[in-house]
Amino acid sequence: MFLTFASLPDKQFIAWGWRIPFLLGIILVGVGLFIRLRILESPIFRELKTKAKLPVLDIVKYSKKKFLLAMGSRFAESASFYMFTVFVLTYVTTNLQLPKSTILYAVMVASFIETFSIPLFGSLSDRIGRRPVYLFGAILVGLFAFPFFWLLQTKNTALIWLAVVFPLTLGHAAMHGPQAAFISELFKTKVRYSGAAIAYHLSAAFSGGLAPLIATGLIAWTGRTWAVSLYLILMSCITVVSVFLAQETSQKDISQ
Image 1: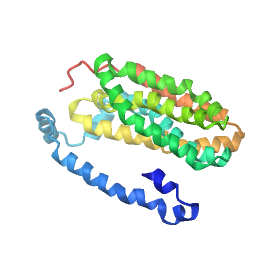
Image 2: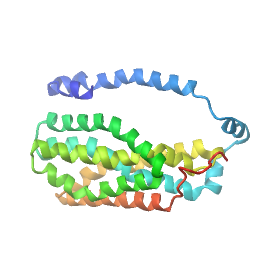
Image 3: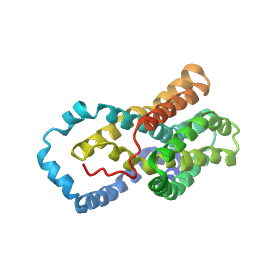
Image 4: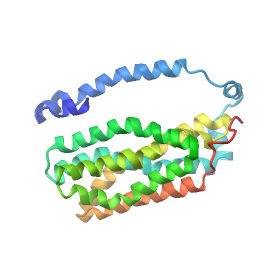
């Protein structure tokens, strides 16, 4: 949908085209709200919800390590997503002086494939565990940090597509697939909602939201892309360590 409006002439896109996808997103908000209101909570959660007064304080007191591991597990996933879908748009069109349609189509195809690969990796994590699948994705993203720019800099359309589609549909999807279960299962029931929600969004703000800005600043400072690759490797290392130190919970009873 965004690609359709992004294909408009620059003046029209800047004037009004970019607003349409966001306005249409109101429909998704309604769908999400409907689903959330219809979901039935487990009896254990409803019972503990009436007892817990300040779950955030319980997280600070009893679950600091798990909270930090949950945050760290998102660094590679969130940073890579924003790098491969947001930063890459500016880099390809501004630094490489290529048509924006080239990279927009690549991102669109990758996003479409991820609608299938994410649930597949999630299902795989139910069978072999969250940690192996998650670690595979984080390591793959780290290993692809330098080849990502090498492929883009060829200015070959097929290789540019490969640079975007490969890490998103395999590396990012392998982390995003088991992520919801992995983070939620780290916490006990009485702090699960607060712990998972705060860790998830706080980590996204630092690792994902700032990623394009940091990457752009690193290129402006060094004049090269190696610094951005090292930054992505650092994010991957943080996630690898966090997931490695976390307990495997896919086959354990987490009702308490």
